[in-house]
Length: 315
Image (cartoon, rainbow, N blue to C red; front, top):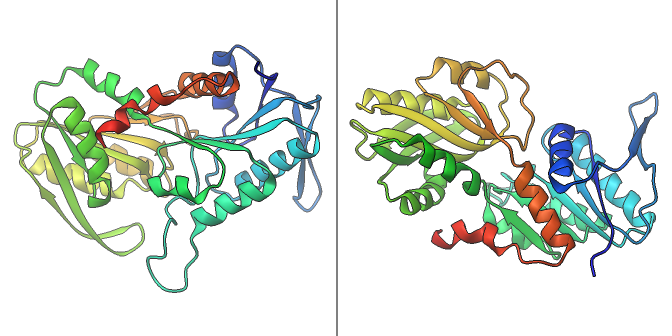
């Protein structure tokens, strides 16, 4: 028998949380945030959560206040005698720090896992981690959703006659290859080199794109500099069109300008991170609300969620 379920939202992506609650068939739980003069804040659940399964929705993109807000809400639920506490983190921040790639740097993703566990979380749900191995940083169940279940139907509806999948860098080649195999298309890969973070020193395109409709696949779009350069090179090599699928719309710096100035036909994103600018003519948003609502329902009722992993069988 399932326990009563209450869905709460932090402030990082309240609009998505409302959509998830509506899709689930309920309203968000009542929570308030008190702020002191120095900026310190304190969450408070304005209803009883004793004996309930609590789902707390909050993405942990910058600033780090979003992460600490989630930690405080987990601690609040634990001290209020919630039965289980599930953190729903549509975008898992610090995921790009999944290893030591040079001396004397932290492994931020592991620290995230330690903090969430110490706060008292019983389960974590997230989408398209930057590195799959982050699931292994947790000693509690981790449900890793994939935006492919949303993107693939969209791609099929485009009916592109000469579609070919592409990766904007070698790190995303595995992801793009999975799409290519599933959709029975060819694959191209962009090889880039960086001297410093967010700055590309050189790039090459590996594969034939002439006359093709290229779809670049990535998990995060940050400054969009890589996509801009890659799309320009692909079009210069004779491609018919180029578009991009990206799960997490970090979109920092000159990202919006880079998208508008690029030859990209469109950039398809999800709503794991709210857009700062909704005026772009090239950006299309596909909501993750129904997917997360279904996962919450299955977790609450002890049902399998493996069908949401089906796409991963070809990875």
